[in-house]
Length: 312
Figure 1: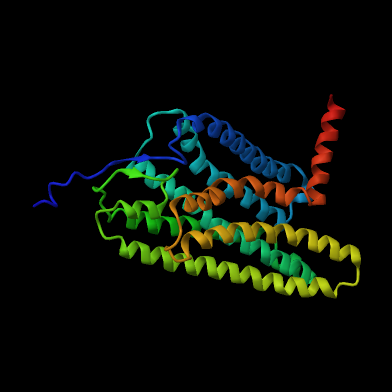
Figure 2: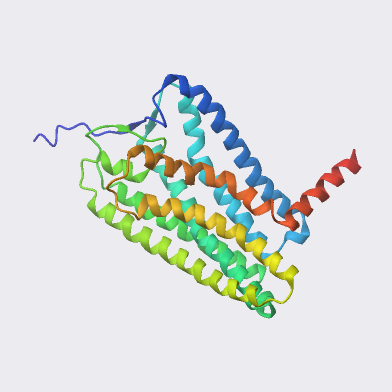
């Protein structure tokens, strides 16, 4: 009877990054700059690839899709966090909470599969260059990207569907800056054991499978690069692959710490830092990681700047 009288929670309070009043405005200014830079950087990269015919290749098709996933990932979390910095109302409805997790989870899972496609693209280009036009046609690459997004949406939909089996009545306070799924489990009145088991299984399978596929691809790529006689060819291959490996290391490193490592011995503040890194910082860094050392991208940027000067 006591169970029936419990009031079910339909709204949550997001406590954000900190409760200190003096930090709210400085954090708002910091993260609004980060968010605008992230959106301009990622969407600018997509626009650049669309405008320059030299960038209409499978590698840049994957990179453009990754930039879009990064923009979606950041946009699912940052705007609500920015509002919370300046507003006293930190409430979020159950539906909005589920939607926020769904879109972030979809983007993050899609990014895992896109990183595999980018690694496979480099493997074929460097190890089997004669087969590259056949194996990595634009049509096939578009289909690969579509499957990646489909798997991302499906994976996230499974977890959101299972969230609806949970009831929330203990507390409506989420000590986090967004609706992170593990935080929802903490305030659930229903045993989240099934949900946590599936989170672990899917995380291990998706992250381990995609990470191993990337490592196998780049192991073959590394040996192929070392066999190249041309110093220029080695330098170009290393430059392209090193940017990808840096992005992979940052992305998978934080995901493994959040969803695969054991839960004991890790503080809530440290978990916030991990989440902050892969939800906001990585989408900010990726367009710079992939463009600053890429001569084709920097060359395309120079062409656009020169055209603008001529028009003026």
